[in-house]
Length: 230
Image (cartoon, rainbow, N blue to C red; front, side):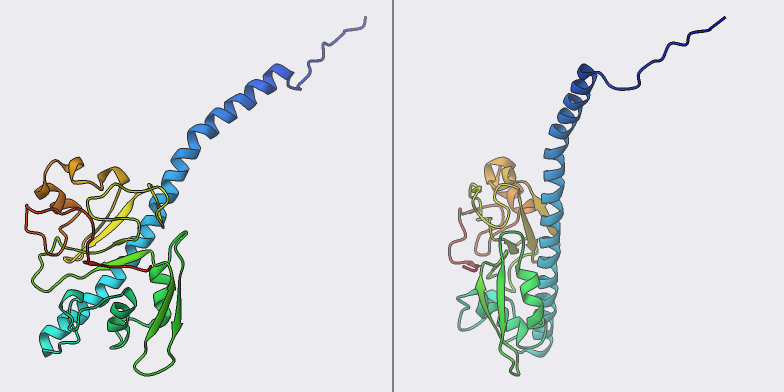
């Protein structure tokens, strides 16, 4: 007596294959925005760390200036004559040796914002900047409080709607470093005073612009307080 065994095919039917493809497409559509957001946050955090490194050099220089009464070792807003460019500011930190000229290109560059640096090869060292700096520095003074903004990403203008085409991060967010040394990454929707409700809350989180009073006078735009490239 012969026993017949039924053979079952292990291959997918066309319908099953289409269902699997549809599920994969749905999962990919859900994952891409999250991955994009995570990538932007990681890049912004990297730029924030660069801003902190610049701040540490600036803080060390200003602290030494207070101890030695050297007028060349001071906060950017206290220099005489007044600083007019980011390059001029950068050389106040590079010249005395608080930063190396070779490190500036890394500190000032980010996705879609490339700052090229030419070294003088002389002593004291100086640099020439070209391209676009991912960071801009505000001309804060020794008298400014700890919540005063020292540096931001190039795409942020104080209490101003952010623009998608602004480098380096467009509408993906911005970062701020305060005079007190703390730093934070923000979403584009947090760029305006209106989001926070009042000037005091805005200054306590995003920060105060040098020249503005505490809790009052949150003036829109950077004015002449920021040093940027270009």
